[in-house]
Image 1 (tube, rainbow, N blue to C red):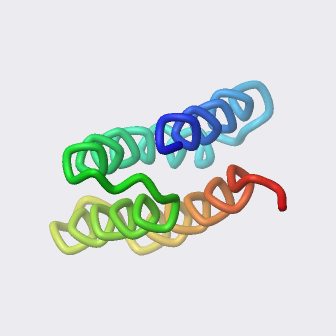
Image 2 (cartoon, rainbow, N blue to C red):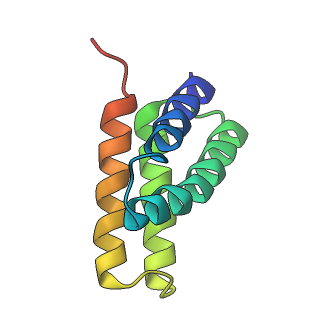
Length: 93
């Protein structure tokens, strides 16, 4: 489940490459690292839900923001892109 969800998000990021702005490409690339880390942590802990993965990515982003890694405009951009990617990757009911 978690690997399939990660694959859907990564595919969405990859699909943006041809038409994305520089800011969107930055946000997508930045999120890849946080997503990969969150998936590894989820698998290590035996958590396989999309909701748990979302919480881990948001926690990772929060730590990065507190460490001063992202300017305020980049924070908005990255967090907004994460929400968009997450919602787009959720399985349809």
